[in-house]
Length: 321
Image (cartoon, rainbow, N blue to C red; front, side, top):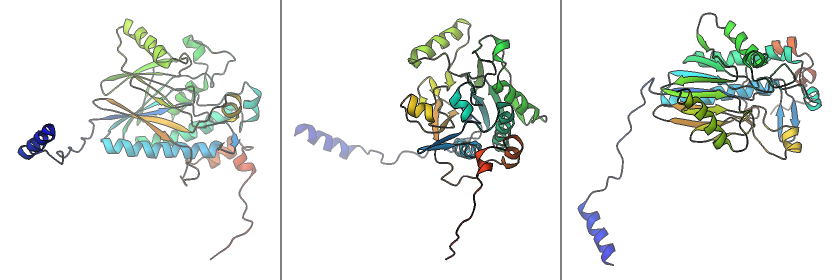
């Protein structure tokens, strides 16, 4: 009772601010943004009760990704944006499931992928100063086996897509950052060193594996503040690293082979005083009526057997009220 009386007395003597002071509006350029594009697996076809994926769905999900990321960047007053490509732009074609579940061959699919990514970059370049960095993934490799040497690792569709995109911006409207190692790249973003890699070398204990990689760079005198990767197709946001989900979402292998459930998603990041990681859910972009990037002409040219062209919509009955 005495304790309660003392609290009441103190509350009567000292005013407690009910409303905190208003926060100042963010200044343009105080924060920088990162758009993390990983495991988009263009050319994959998925037809499950819980998920469908093709080039048209990919174009809508990428468009939604851009719109949601830009909304967040504008809220923070972002002026500069890094597009971080961390591998697996194209789906693999080395297994029977993958061969049966593709729209076209990968050489042709590359141009459809570039068509979507080019429009994606144009969206951001229209509002921000944009730079692009890329590392290779395992599924987009051209050879049978995974390569770690620099020359062999460049035999990869991820590198090819990066090179083609650079040719599409000859005026320098988008800056393309080339690293010495196609498997890893360190990019400075607003005073923070961000390490990009695909994630093939990171096992079940991600905390421990990331610690080893950061330690390897520390021995070279490079301090890594944050690590971005993908590979496992499930999003995970942590204090010192973030793993991206995938653009396709669940497929037959994850559902039946691994007994795992997943949703289509990608990550973006705000880098100011700290590093804020945000997962953007892209699963229902098709149902939400998002207008995707224009790929109709490119589909007819590079993937004439794509299901989007083989099964055009046909009006059977129209009811006018």
